Amino acid sequence: MKQLTGSMPIAALPPSTAASSKKQLLETIDWLQREGAATETNLKLLTALVESILWSEESYTRFLQCGFDAAIELFDISSQNWEFTETNSSPHNPRNWDEYKRLEKHQ
Image 1 (tube, rainbow, N blue to C red):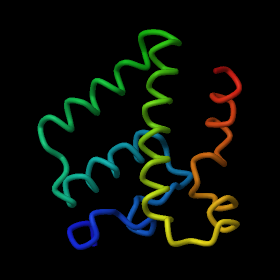
Image 2 (image 1 turned 90 degrees about the horizontal axis):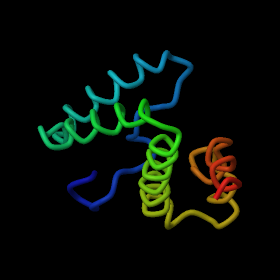
Image 3 (image 1 turned 90 degrees about the vertical axis):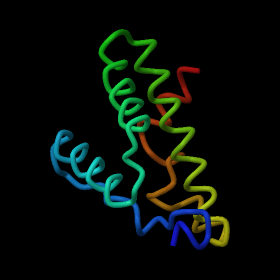
C-alpha cells in the first residue's frame, strides 16, 4: 500500500496494546524491518531518540514534540478522505491523546 499510494494506512500501523514498553519497541523495530525501513541510519536515529529522553526534561519534551509532529503528519495524510467529525474524534488522532494535550498546555 505504501508503495502504491505513498502513504501508510492507519490499519497497517502496529496496534497500540497494553504490552510492555519494551515489547512494543521490539515489535515496532520488527515492523520496520518487515517494511524495509530499518536502515542503519533509521535505527541509529531511533536509538538516539530513545537515549535522549534520559538526559533531561528538555530533551524528553523535544523527543515528544518530534514524535507528535511525525504522528500528526502521518495521521493527517492517512485520514485525508475521512469525514471531518470522524477525523476529530478518532482515537488514532494524536491530537486526542492525553500526553499530546499535556504537552500543548506546557508550550
